[in-house]
Structure formats: C-alpha cells, structure tokens
Length: 473
Image (cartoon, rainbow, N blue to C red):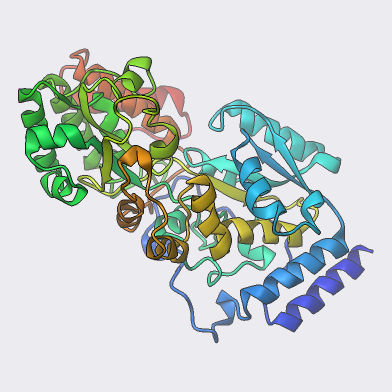
C-alpha cells in the first residue's frame, strides 16, 4: 500500500510539473557553531524564472490540488505540536475552513508549556522517539530556539515536501535567512513577520516636541543620537523616554554583524558593547522608569502617562500594549524607530516521521505562502503576515487601521522595518547567550560591574561556566 501511495504522489507531481523529492531522508546538518555568510545561507526569495527547475515549475493551484489528493489517498493523520494554542487557532481559522475534506486529518497537540523551555523540547523528543499514532509531524518552534529544532536529526527541508522557493518568494528575507542552513536548505517556514517598531504617545510628542505624526516623530528619532536628544527633552518635561533600559535589547541585537559563536569560539560583536553603553546611558541619565520588561511596573507605565514610548513589534501592538479601557487608548502611534529589528516569531518545522507529507505541505503552503490566507491572517486576527504581496494588498485596500493607535494603520511602519531586518548570523546558542548578555547589562547599569571591559569579561565567564561546548578565549 505504501508503494502504491508513493506512485500516486509521483504521478500527481509529474502531471503538474513539480519536482517532488522523497521526504524521508534526513539532512546533513553541518556545524551548529560556524558563522555563515549571506552567500552561504540565504535562500533567494526573488521570484525565479519559470524555467528554473530547482526553484519549482508549475503553478501553486496545481500543487494544492495534488497535495489535497495525495493527503486523501494517504489517509494518515499528522500531529501538530506546539507549546500554546496560538497556532491551533490559526489552523482553525485559516486552514480547516479552506480544506474541510482533509481537516480531520490534522490533529493539534498543545503541550501548554513555555516555547523556549527545555521541557517543551524534551516532550517533543519523547513523542518522536515513541512513534506511533501521536508521532510529531509538524513541530512549532519559538524564534529564540527555533534553530535548535531545525538542526535536529529529524528535521527535513521543507522543499522535500514539494514546496518551492518560488512559492515562498513573498516572504520577508530575514525569515528566510534565519531558517536556511549552511547547506542552503530551507528548514522551516513562518506565517509571521514580527518586525519591530517604536510605539509612542502622540499627546506627549505634541507637548514636548511640537509634532505628533509618525513621519515627523520618526525624523527626530531616526538614529540613536536623535533618540537620545529626544530623551533629554522628555526628561526636561518630566517624562521617561522608555520604561526600562532593557528596552533597547532587541533593537541592538539585530545590529550585530558577526555571530555569537564562530568556529566553536565565543565572539563578542562590537554591537554588544554598543548595547551596554546605550542601555547604561538611558539608565544613568534618568531617561527611563527603571522598569524591566514584563514586570507590572513596565505594564503600568503604558497607561500612567509617565513614559513616552516602548520598543514593540507586530504582536506587541495588538496583544501586549494593554491600554484598553484607559485614557491612553487611542493616544499611541508607531514609527520605525532608530534601527530595523525583529522580536519573536514562530517557525513550522517538519519531521521525517511525518505520516502524511502531502498534508504537511498543504498546511505549510496555506499558512506561509497562500496570499489570500495571509491577507485574512491580518484582517481577521491582526497577525502581521510574512507575505509582502498580502501586505501590499492590505495597504492598497485600506485595511489595518487600529483604534488603539488613534486610527493609524501600522502596516506601513511594519513593512518598512521588516525590509530592513537582517538575520544571517543566528546560531542555536543565541537564546542562552542573549540571556547572559541581559544579566550582565543589568549589573553594568547598576554599577555592580565597574567597566565595559569587565562586562565583556563577565559574559565570557558565564558562557564558559554554562555552555561547555563553546571555547572562550
């Protein structure tokens, strides 16, 4: 029966002119610690010439039809593993309603854990090792740790499912670069493009700066010198520029030009030292409320008119800027801020034990490539889609204005920032070392660490003590 199913899938692939390859082979991971260049890792997301077979010929409609038929012929269920119910909700709204004939073959497993936790990774591994009816087929991975999932022995390139670079050509480049390994294999796809922005209070801007429109405010904070100039003016009027000095962590992390780990050795990019100095300036000059991210004070400052703005992102604005039912509702606006950056995100990886790879391809295509589905993703869920064509159509249609932003449509700012983000130097160690960097920065700000050199030395000491397979010099 298995051979018959493979033959059916092959016939369908030939009929639509796609070059499908066997999905059961594991990839060659290469090293997890070697820094790579754009030419080594970037999958080209420019729409290719139709004659380029390696990028996939045929049209998407034919591919969808073949995947539906193949999924039905296979008849096996696939298990979607995630740490929370976010992806489950997206599947419910954007996949099940589109493909009712196969939707019962998609089974969600919400492990209800922290996505970055060791426990989540361990439970996914245990389910994979156990095999059987609940074996993971698609595994969701948080941006902070997604590379460690993509580097698992069980992870297969998504192109092994028949998905092509052409189909994913509207994705923002940073999401492609992040999910592309040293061999040039695209190991995951995402429906989100969590571009960063600066969210500020228009009423405070008007009072202190004499302007409040996003373009005008952006002109004043388009670089860090301008940002600090505005911070000084805010302080003079009794306002904090940001809630806490750690606000600049994610913007500065994406300014690094070299990886944390190169050829197995710890590397401190100059942007790390720049982050330490910028954060300390904000702290020592009194430009913040000294409220760390995700604390109750940090949240309270969103509404008590003590703080000018927050570094947020496409998910922060609708779900974490908690200003509903307060006087701050409608007062915020967004602009790109001093630098392009991203914050968070979720990636879909596929295992070599996936029981119905045609169905897995259909899920990934719908959630990461289908322009109509991704248009609806924002229109229905305010989830910013990783599809530039869908974003452009949303803007052309005038969709996206938010009451909490005083009617501003943030899509233009999201799009502008997303196009500036670069993630070509990620490693699977990033989450651990980023946390160490945050800890050191806090101590440096408060004077527990006396100098910049000592701060760098502290990073090295903590990495040496906690990550034993990295050489620290």
